Length: 425
Image (cartoon, rainbow, N blue to C red):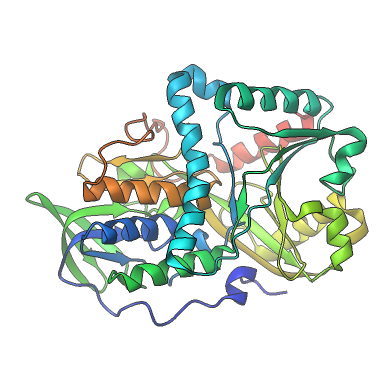
């Protein structure tokens, strides 16, 4: 069993698009070469700005190249909660942005002409509980009446048409969602950015940020850069001490995936009809899909820690596969890996500027492939002066008095969430 991502094992990191050192001066320094940083760089390049993208790791080592590759509708918080807090008009803008994000990812792939394994075969949200059919119908009605967004509820004897498992009581099906191979997408974005003249510098850790007049001084392990603007595009990998106020607003959480050995095509046709994307309606949810070479790719987490032992994770995932799909309970796991996502205290993504004038776009809460594409592009437009507003700009970005950037409370939170899942609450 390999303890490396299935995605990057299949699509190695390109070695001809980065440079050895950053320039001395640019319009914008982007910290983080994931989807947020690269889509922001793409937008800024098209606006005529000089940009360098620096990353403390190699390209593709963060979550952007190793996640589930799902481009899903909606946002993490319940719709009713958003309406109560922000009202129907703002909620509709945030919702529409989540759909625009899927369209944007497809458009970028088409415009820049790279293969990202994109497909738009829809997604299925799976409920376990006895009241899941009732809840699914209520959600479907809300989506239709509030947003004009159509979904289909599948239950009872019809469930095998969308999921080959007896575990679930209801399915909410969307035809809007898309999928990508995240490594191909991340590397394709990097190549498209490099072809626009944007410099990418790997293994270039930022060690200090300071103001200099109207601009910034960015000190890195490969040189000092003067810039008009700086964008933190580090999400779950945001350093604790570089921009402390931002780190206090996001919580790094681990998420893990495994890939099985290839399965017979007819088996996957039965287990995952329609080659859709799937996720389960639990706090400790699982998300899964089929690979192009007929593997089951399944992700989740046994707790919230970003530092779990991968062999222990693989054992737990193997058990989960057997619970969901007993007929493949003995399937071999060939790859196990993990990455960090970032959650916020209100479960919404956020973009804005710190008190020191540092731009940021973070906090996707597991919806990163689509929302990072959208918010990266939007923050690039804001920095470049092409736009002056966005539905997420200016939303209150909370923290907690007890949080200083070290999420000491994750073990207790994990126990609580696991207990609530077991109780079906």
